[in-house]
Image 1: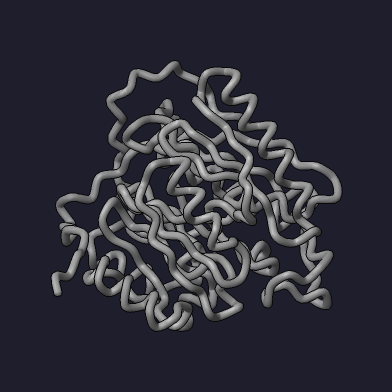
Image 2: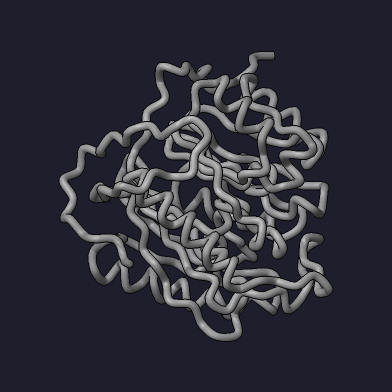
Length: 324
């Protein structure tokens, strides 16, 4: 039997490319209900601290040279801060969300409206509402030309075929088995176009075998690093923004030639969220990455080993200042 695997990445290949993210501030953030094991109604939430931590994440992206669009939050939607669940955007096409839990379902049309407005501005070519339960980037992880797709707790497996047919990309289904890792992006993170980090016990035996075959050189997270949502990370190909508590994972990434950028999102962790949960990537062009104007700042990101310079895309974008 022939083993199919993506090429082994080399530290010399670590190149940061500019990204575009849609974020939503935690203005109304609190734990009002429990729809995952992280949510405990008896644990108090500090909304001001959540806002400070979120803004540090936003500023970190800007300092790395990325573009951040900010969506206005709506009253009564405390989890709207987790924008990764709002859509999946690839090569200028966007598939909206159909969230499983009634408590969050009113978020979907808000994000859909933003996508439709972006299409009206010529920034997206097509926007579609999904037919199946689909928690978007929570359960769909883009790795180069592949889309890894999670199911087991939130997203319906039927959404996997829907994504493949709409975007025309190969989709690999993976079954999640640990309720603490209810979304794929809590148990697996893309590092670049060819490699990932993941926590094997979060997956079924068959899915672990698939991941070993596709990514034989993957970074394997420890139980502690998974439990602080260290894998709910965001990579631009070289810089990896992740939980400040995921120390061992950061060391493993450093040894592989990546540059971990540590951000404390402990307040948002009380609802089961981390850096990736708060970041919806808007991939506009054929290469997957959105053009963005660099932002100069004297403030350095909170990082472990420094920041890799971002390589611009070949597109000549219209300069837009990121929102304040």
